[in-house]
Length: 301
Length: 237
Image (cartoon, rainbow over all chains, first blue to last red):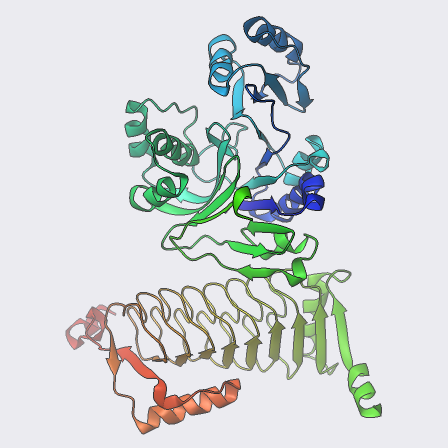
């Protein structure tokens, strides 16, 4: 199983309460994924020329100040990190690529959950309700967000194996389904220089998208490539700096529903998660067609 | 006015925002054993699964809003009307009675149904009528891919179009489509539409309250050429 939720704000009132709405949607998907939960929230952009890193530490007593000091020495910026449970967000006076590389080189014990100008990814094992509380989701504002509740089938229940997966700067992927050719695909992508940190099938899909985008494909082209190159069942939701996209495999066993009002666009595995949004009863709702890419971007609405 | 008020008063209203789904279904199931209200209205379903399932009574249940999986599944005798959309498996394994949906339905509508009538006024997505075993299904809009897969008996009437692989590995079910068929599944072929068939389609359209000309439909069914239809293979079963 697994549950997916996504929310794209078209009105300022939704942006103000994005985290609260996303948390409510996520909790509705608990029965589809009680093992772990995660969100990617797009908002509060870093200043031009700077980037945001969301880091995870398995050490509950992590001294985030020491990480900040190291980043300050390297990039001459000293803003305090925003710490939430096991994660901390750093705004770094450098491009996302340099900041990301510094963490991988100097603090390999930490995990870069996301890097970019607007994205923040948080994920953890446990019930979605506990996750929403621990990470104070109701505090977040932003333009759009994705969430995932996981019922693990292909790999272990760990923080690293939870979704969303980063697929590049300001990009992420959440997945409901299972891929059957991920081992072969992972080998090929490693030869292309794509790094993997788990045995998780979704991380391979994320790596595949990262590779296609790196090679010059548009997001739509990269997603359409999935139809040829990925074997298995999937409903994907992909977050970008400007919006999100949804794709179901051609067999479409895995559920998905889309809905739109004047104030928001939402996607989910089930209507239950959308029903909690304001004005849901009057929303236009439909089931996305198999094998068709649906995308929303800020510029288009 | 007095009559309308009496009718309104006779409707048992259950609000799923304040009443649990189990409580609603328990009360509906009790009607199989003892008399009770004949008209029910369920409000605030909010996509809940298994609403009004397993009924065995001559009752009418109106549901105001969208429902989740398996609504009205396994029902006998009851009439269930969904004034909204329904997710996966509406009227799954329906035994008898009637299920109507004003909006669209997700995959596997009427799956394995053994009797009764399912009416979908909007579209149905993939696998509509999969393994149907006697249910009649009338869809006002279109159906998605793999509809009537391994369909055994009963009729599927589609007023719009059908997706790919219609009627794959079909047995004796009869399929009627007014619009285009993206492709036919294995062993499913177009067959002649005779007066007997137009009469059947007319009866089902009338029962569904859908205005369409039965002569506009085309009929599809089994060519009976797959392995299990060969007498030489009968010993394998």
